[in-house]
Length: 475
Ligand code: NAP
Image (cartoon, rainbow, N blue to C red; front, side, top):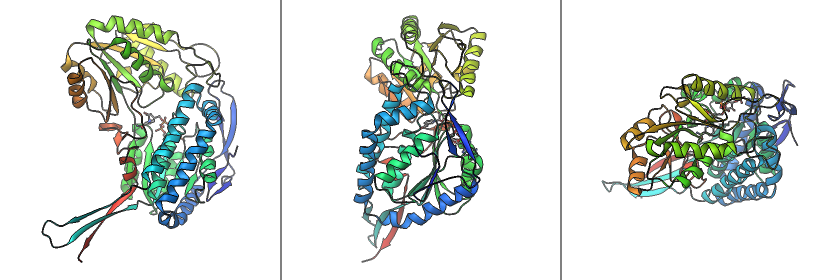
């Protein structure tokens, strides 16, 4: 496959000639080397996007839609190959990688359908003096920055609506997983997206390349998915040029189980909310709050299910949990677990890093976790479930809201009125009510508090790439 930068429809080496290695997390071995874009390459990519902008914005929505639809078809036809590529560079189990390809492709299909629905409005001013005409226009050149945990889906969730709206883009993928982004660029070109509309810039010097692009007045939008820490830096940089931003940041999802819940359903939901993507998801259940009277039963059943999962190389068909993405991630997970154990928690299963090659961590369930443990405050981003008990609705809501994050929460109860009441009281952009999975291209995905600004997916995802223009009309 191509491993150079993709700028103005061409595969080009970095102007410095530099390249960087991509590792297989299962072995630590090098699987490919990729061109390492620098600041001048970043500006070349913005040049290409700016040049392609007016023609793409003027392209009929139906034509833009059909290119996206074709990209969905191509991704679907090549799902197995794309899944292997994701698994190879990210480490996730093939079953998760296949799930990601379907989910990622669906953003192209969804936004192919939304591309023809950027409708404006016409109204009469309250005074009756004039008409209020609102049209929607593409924001312009967009810089898209994505993380390594869903290398395909986080890219399509941005490229889909941007292209549907008539914007052109420069995608800066995570350095751990640039190959999937380059494969997506090839698919979009094959689907008929014109040169310069989508540019992909792998870069190890993300701070410099993204910072340089944000200084360019032609860039009118930044859409970022990643950590809250980097999101804060980019928000400050975007403020300089008053650049429109969408921020999909970190999460610290509570998973609340009331005593009246269907425990079988709660365990199934917990396995998905915790273990999808090996726990490396912003939506991953990070803190389990279980009502005291069912806590022992829930913990024992969850530990039993977690201990049966098969851990191994992601590319092995029988693997259910692959390695984590890199050494830093596995070291962080282990340090959070060891910290919790030192403060009195008990490992019902897992709890220590295995010897040997690869960035593996075993599925782990911790009980008796101290309320102030770091593992309840920080994103774990690994296959670890800390369990804390509570009594009553008010305590559950207080614990769930005791975080700076607000991306998603999960609530299990047999009482629908309580479920809806608690869903309204929890400070989160999304709630899974008796459900362990919320991600859906047709729904608005995003967080409140320090989990972000804006929404991706649904109709709202398209509006993030459109500016409203109001024309006061007399006729
Ligand atoms: P990250 O360290 O914040 O990196 C995300 C992206 O930003 C990468 O492309 C990275 O490039 C780039 N980057 C890093 N420092 C930068 C800087 N100073 N200026 C410009 N760009 C910079 O996050 P990650 O570790 O890849 O991903 C995990 C995080 O993403 C978690 O916090 C997770 O919750 C969050 N996430 C959120 C959502 C959501 O929808 N809310 C979805 C998925 C993931 P390099 O790879 O080159 O460093």
